[in-house]
Image (tube, rainbow, N blue to C red):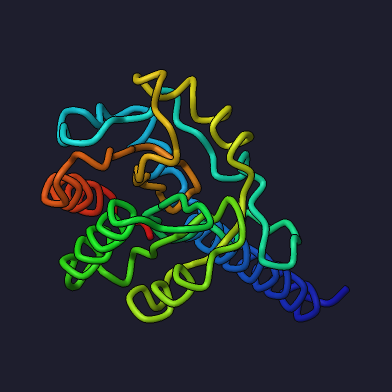
Length: 214
């Protein structure tokens, strides 16, 4: 092989190596861009003392994942977990009808959501129906709660899943409680119907400030 051919061969090898290194770097950067929010969320909710910066709502212990609820759409088809995550959720549980206390709590959740201002796009409200809604409830949601996510779940199953994580063993999902879920699908905080929405808003703002995911 001539000196020129040898030089060309070496140059090609260097070029191939450089291209390969750049390709590997690009792949790692892409992977990191997806992994960073996951790692951050994991650190915040499993290593940071959440109670140190929020003390109004009850922190679930242990935290429950939304996938355990086996939520379905209105046709009865199970909803993939990835369609329920990637944003913060304010979760309310609904029966067939919604009395005054129920309507008041839904109103509170709407006010909290509206008060988030520039962070509002990071949050969605999710209504988990235990049975098909009455005409009055459908009309209430249509007129007063546009944009809320409507899903369906089994109250016995969800109650059983949440019970070990809640301090009050007599607590009922039908008591107009509101839960907060993080963008990774971790249902991690609850508020009773007796708690004012200002407490709810206080904690939610703290969580959004502490974590930039979602």
